[in-house]
Length: 241
Image (tube, rainbow, N blue to C red; front, side):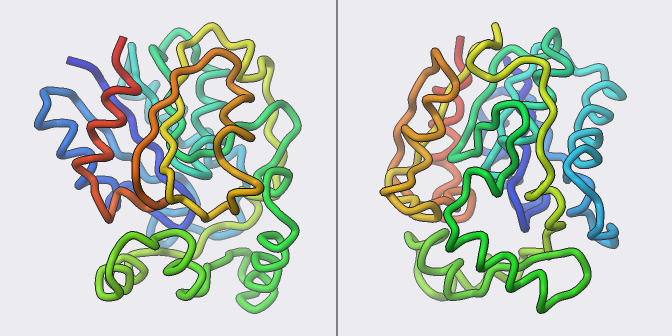
């Protein structure tokens, strides 16, 4: 039995990972799905990356979790990297699921295309409250392109505005991921075009892990909605000793 902690991506909460978590629990593991500060119902949207990271540090330390397989999806890669940097003795393996892999001093924006940044800036200007949202058509075509329209619409209704400072703030690390002694894995959805294939998740970002285990899986960026059982198997393969 292993202890998995699943860290969601932008626009999500831990609730959207519960179907994935339940599939992993059925295999006999303990699974936690916390919601990051900034994405909780009623959270102020002006919070930054450090506060979001601290919310998971607190979750781990308050529950005295140890020997964790720490999984991060998308923006969640920023969080798990910082947690491993701060609490390496509590982490058994890091699993990046189509996730950003930062080095010290990098932000999510530093790993996006100019087109993505323009889209997010336009959303922030329109909303005016420190948050950003994805237009449905972008969500449908690039993040969840492996489901029917009704499923995509239902999933989109679960999303919540995301604090933009968590994407523009630069991370502070003592050790870059490639130099961490912790085991690392990368789960790559082969139909994930949320980042274009000429500017890909893998190998552009995964190679920043140094030595790592690669798990390839068919599907989009949002496999937690489209095929949580298949994703659970991939994450357990990524998390095994």
